[in-house]
Structures are given as structure tokens and as C-alpha cells.
Length: 401
Image (cartoon, rainbow, N blue to C red):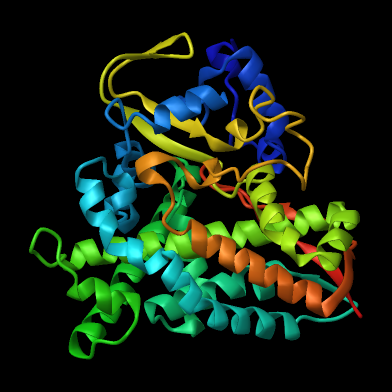
């Protein structure tokens, strides 16, 4: 196991650019070990990851609250959402949004999502280099979640910045970076103010959007408070934007590297769902999930004290060769959906169906419009936070039919 001075640094540029060789070392050399930043206990093997996710009694989701709400921030609405709660409180709130993301709701939403995808693709430049993250990978999920929540589409860029911050951008802020701390505090205040204004507007004139439904909902006979509603909106913003942005970006990376897969999908669109599932395993948008031990516990042969911050490495579990044969190869024919990137058990992502719907329709629109895609001369860059991973910039050239 690495010594204290040799801890794996999960935020180093090399690891963020390609974390999987480091994950493999961790699985073989130190499957449960302390890492940077902050000396969190990282869990890298699939079987250990599942054990943590299945045991909220010993591995509490309060870890998310600790990781996303450092004392200097002064309150992160995401850290008060049901993602940071344990049963039974989490279960009572979960029922409020299950209908919004169920099969019936997705079928109702599909025509509008298809229109959004086609419009975004129709406006993409042809035959010249373009960074596809803003006009495609960000535009589509931001437009969908804006419609679902009844938000101003003009806020697209700011919505993504807020989502980046509250899913873990604050974890990259060093103690001495006062400017970044103040920017984060300002962004949280701006998010709270905007969501508060949206709630006030819906209270005066309810609509058919999800925010209006949440305002009218009752949990154990009581309406949610304004702070609880803002926390819900922060969670839905993250679930509706972050996961899909990085799913679409990772899909493009795979298609850029594997033109034969692009050709297969063009000839057989029925393979798109399998493609999306394998992208979610091969390049999972959610790379890690924080937890907090509620008692002393042994995990992977290591004794963890009560109150230990644990980082569940979903990205490592998805590449564990003990569970996935030939795990580092993208395999379009890999059997059965791999849901671990959406969490497990009580915290299985409610937005999984929405993410898959958007992924499928966005790819269909792209395949309909273009003969093939290729890498542009400019290099791509990777998003840098502790919890999520995906392209930050992705220059490509799209060739029409």
C-alpha cells in the first residue's frame, strides 16, 4: 500500500485525463486506501463498492453533505437534498419525484426531447472544427431540464456552472484560494435567489411543470418548505444536466475513437440503447460517491474508524476485471445493462430513464444528420472535479451526407 507521502491524488491532471490505470493500480495494490484530496478512504473494487452502496446504515450519505458543503461555503442547497439523506427520510421524499421520471412521464416527454435534439443538431456547423460540448452536449440537457422545471432557457450556461459547482467543484478549492471561495459563495447565493424567484412565481401562478407539482405535493401531510424545494430543484438540476452532458460527451469520444461503431449504429439504430449502457460503464459520468462511516467497520481488509470519509469509486468498479471481462475494451455486445454508474439501491438515480432517453434521441439526431465525424486538430480537455468526469472541450468535425 502506498505510504502517506505516496497517496494517490485523484485530482491530479494525469488522473483526470485518464483515471483507469490508476484505478487498476488501486484495485491490485490498495483496494481501500487514503487518497488526496483530504485523506478520504477510496474504495476501488466492485464487490467493496457494492457493499458500501448497499449498506446506508454503516456508510451514510451524509458523506455527500460533508464533501459538497465545506464550512467556508455557508450552505450548498444540493447538500440538503435527498441524495444526502439516509432511509427512512430519503424514501419519503423520493416518492415525490418518482412519477416525474417514470416510464409514463418519459413517453409523454419523448416527442419534445426529440424536437430539442433535432433543432440542436440542425444548427451545428458542417465540415469545420467545432467544440461540440456547448452546442450539443450541454444545450440538449439544459433545454430539457429547463422545460421540465419551467426555467428560463436563456440561463443555460449559468445552469451548467451552478451544476458543476454543487456536484463537487467546491472540492477542488484549496484553503488559501479566497477568490475561488468567494466566487463559489456568490454562485450559491445567485442560485438560491433565482430558484426562490421561480418558486415565488409558481406560487402566484402555478403551471404544469415539475416545480408547480412539487409545491403542491405533501409529505406526511405537510408541504415542503421553501428551502426543501430549493434543495429539490438543485438535485433535479444536477440529475438533469450533469449526467447527460457527460454521457453525451463520452458518447462522442467513443464514436471518435471507434468509427466502426458509428457505422454499426448508423445501420442499426436498435443498438443505440446497448451503446449507451456500455458508454455509461466505459466512461461513467459519475466517477465517485462520498459516504461517511457511522461506526468502526472493516472493508477490504482495512479497519475504518467511525466518522471516516469514504469515496466510492464507481469509475473503478465499472472497470474491475474481476467483474467485467476485458473491462478496458469498449464492447457494444457486452451482455445486460450496467446500472452501477447510476448508483445502487436506495440511491439509484431517479433520472436514469431521462438520461437514457436523451442519450438515445440525441444520438439518433446526430446519426440522421451526419455521415461521419472525426477529431479536430485541437486537443480535447477533461472536466476536473472529484465526483464527475467528462469532456470539458471536445473539438470535432462533422461531415454531412
